[in-house]
Image (cartoon, rainbow, N blue to C red):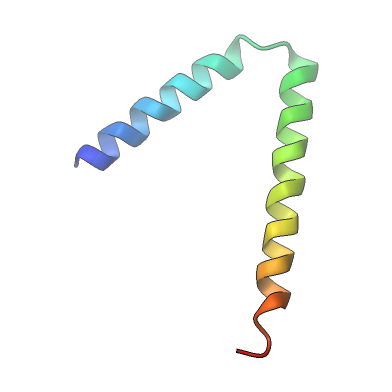
Length: 51
């Protein structure tokens, strides 16, 4: 239960910070995170074929 409360509080802080950033900066950061997650997904998907 404490983990859920902490996660919700952290999400609220991050969403509040995102609401106050300029739109181009927010979109650039979102794109960078999306690319990072895509690269991570591809590396995880293709890296463990031998295991």
